Image (cartoon, rainbow, N blue to C red; front, side, top):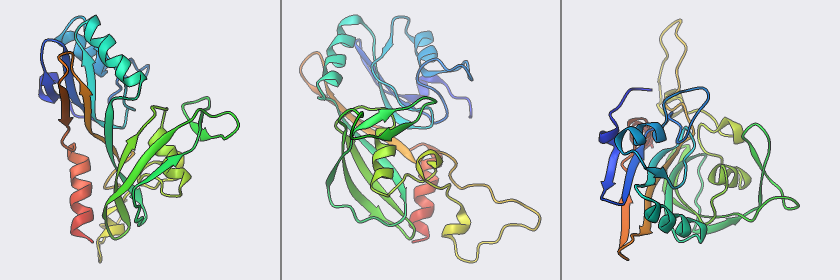
Length: 237
């Protein structure tokens, strides 16, 4: 992961809130395998800051932080009551013409950071999904999770047989340029590296109510790897 300055990922800041565009490959909270995390960097920038939700290590996009206890309580209640509107962009393996649908399937966490669909033991979970653009062998979708379960979008897409590209944990496959580009040749004696080497998921936008009653709506630009993936998918339709 390339080094970056914390101030360069800030999307919005005032006296109460700080929203950042989290890069992929960095944990939101403390990570035993890597001492660097978003919370540590944020507290070096602002002492009392608290993170209001979390994104998976591989997932990029909008992350909300509160600078004081009042702001933290205010937005935490909105998360608890499902009043925060989050839109994720995901690239799926295969071609899927998904009209706006609601995927409702209860999720059960297992050990070792994995979840399964379990109608007997899982917690109610719902994700709204629609196709945004179809490519030759992949699909860009918009996902709006109405609940906030671990790996919710990933397992729900796998459940409807449309796993996320790069999500090998739930049936997805890495993306190689040779899959997309006709007459693409790997150099002799060389092994082709993936065009995209993580779960293809980006927290694209987020809306919540500020303490002053106004709605705050923030969009996060794609990180470089996601932009390159979309560019190549469009180019090789």
